[in-house]
Image (cartoon, rainbow, N blue to C red; front, side, top):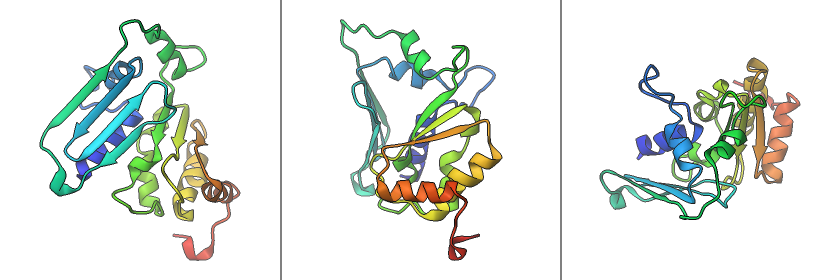
Length: 193
């Protein structure tokens, strides 16, 4: 199930393509966002986007419950007044020319019930996000993060990629404290690499 989960994480980030000469890697994203709902079931991983929800959801089945193949479901009200241009504006630069913002569900970086504690997990989450001006990390469904994970994102990455703004949403007090400690440059000796 690792491959399906990783594919959903990359799909959520957008701008991933196997053929950059012929397509941008933005098609599924801009096809799904004007819809009322968009769902993917791949193996044992279910990912859904709903227009009136401020977050995407991902659920997993056990290996034994997984199914072969991929199913995609899309729904759109026949009388929807949403426009593709409005969706693009929400994720584009101020000049409206480039696709410059992405929202990444942090929970997708986990496998099973594992905790998000390591730098390697943070690096996987951050792969390719330097292509955006603004990256919104959605911590919905995440109860806590380790200090090394927070440090890699909110100190190391932001220092080495000043052109990319990292914004955290749906954080609890514990995650907020870890983020603030990382931004302040504090890391206990026991957690330094």
